[in-house]
Length: 320
Figure 1 (cartoon, rainbow, N blue to C red):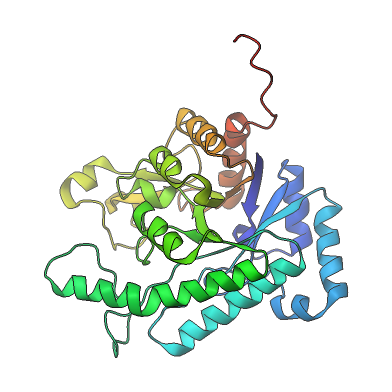
Figure 2 (cartoon, rainbow, N blue to C red):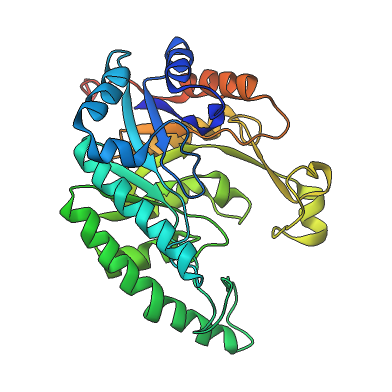
């Protein structure tokens, strides 16, 4: 298993500078943003799509540092009721899939998106309970009329280009837990799977280890990000929290660098369980820790993952 980094944490620096910095830390994989919510300062999507020489030069920068691109990321909302927003996200997604195919990158990461509550609505609507009964009507519209038709077509498009989709399971999106992930995969096909990020599961009360076992080969890519869940604040107000991310002392939860939400034992179990279900690819560190600088947070995450990651194939079971 390899340790990677989503390079948006250094979006203010040129790609070659970032690659050199990461390689010096022992990083062997990078995940690159192509647009929508994912910063695209390290990749010119339209240029690389049309210019083979530019693609070759780009890939050379990666390979000469003995690194790989684990995934391209274009997290957006292609189900948004505003057609301009939805079409923009869909356009970036399809271009990203095409570029991944041309550059032999196996995974494109994104969000499922979130539709409106009914036809004519202007904003997305996230439903988390079945009552009042209006909510069940919203869910039926969102899944049957909008999301399933879109993702059936998008998944077929990705499969035709020999690319897998990694949907980041994320509250506030239609796919926000294991059940919704597996439902959409059942409807669309195996080219659609998860970009598994445990940080979004912790604050919903999900055990990521159990989630990995339930998802199995539906995991196409993995993010390394931690989350601290504040027991005092949750005891008062529960997990859902819309306070700004910088109000850390008052929030129910906050994103942390690896090891500052959950200890080394958890991350060893995390890596081992991924390996048990057949995932032996990349854990891509995503730094979103408001209490720590990017350099310090990344360095601490790399040190802990180096301790947790299993990098050699298992030996013969000589004792049995």
